Length: 227
Image (cartoon, rainbow, N blue to C red; front, side, top):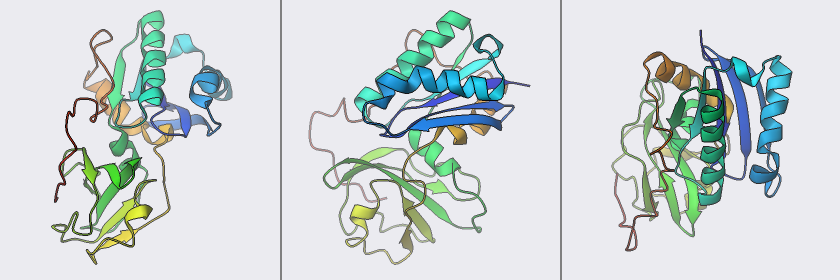
């Protein structure tokens, strides 16, 4: 049994959730402007209160570690590290797009998921996931979208996230459909992966772990990728 607090702060939606062995106990969220810095600790307190759990009972903290908002990711990781240090419990980090893919259930076989987080203009953070297993089929990249982007996808694919709809009219791949569901990642979809990582002792370093900004280390304009 594992009791894990999950924190997701990579987008305008700030959320936290409590899971016991992957099962959701409680969740809280806010999309208030500046809510990450103002409300995150209150969301954590409220979530624990809803579940009747004290921080001292936690076995680990899971946090989304990018890509996403520079400020949001820094706040989330700093809060998670502080809790782990204070409670002497391990840290688990998760890819933001993986969390988005985890939100989908009941998809037919041979369906792909294409989560997209808005980066700016026609640029997004994107990756391709198997719709059934939620395993990644590509790495997460910043991509400048063009009409021919993802032209190699040859299975029915669902593009979603707050960066997807701006590409809807330009996309030329007829196998890609667009959904307004799950525009942002949410902490309530972190529980299963966090429980698995806890069982396998896949912990992140409290000293060395930094947010995976992806674009921070790019000195030139990102190349257009055809996946």
